[in-house]
Figure 1 (spheres, one colour):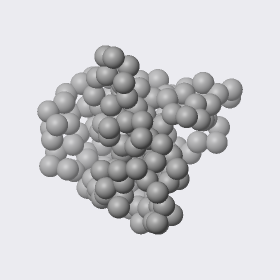
Figure 2 (cartoon, rainbow, N blue to C red):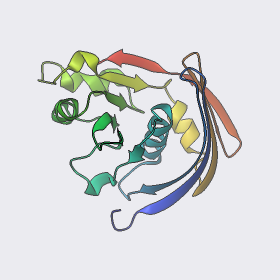
Figure 3 (cartoon, rainbow, N blue to C red):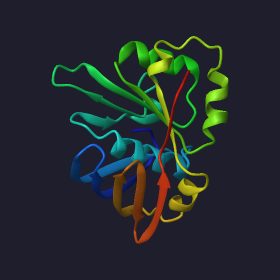
Figure 4 (cartoon, rainbow, N blue to C red):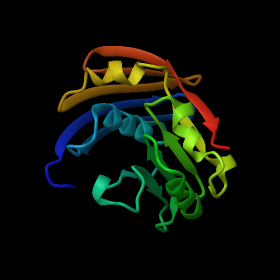
Length: 179
């Protein structure tokens, strides 16, 4: 954990109906001083929406060679590499070389996030998915974040239903391929 990080505690009820995953999670997330609330919330949602055995948050900015979220199998092999925000093409290329599955979750305009990747060399780019939310959804949800947050995350028919400390919202989950 980077010096000066603020710890957030999340009590998450996850109901991913689309994937048949139902879990209660107690998560502690370190927020680096340079990290926005929108980025941290997107990182939390990426963790929940990609939830699988062995999933973890990386050490953040101090872990330069790791994505924001990743999962390893019982042998220690990477099974998913999840970037958050607007990673550059080189990170996606590296992630795709190291992991069989790569996903990006962004709280920004996905067209603007993907534009710099055009024409760049990204290994298996056609297999990388870019996920986004309805415009303004993450910003509105971020206003409900507190250091201790009770969260309900539900995905039903590719719609995200989110509750944070009593705030409720929903968003379509948008997905596109990188290439």
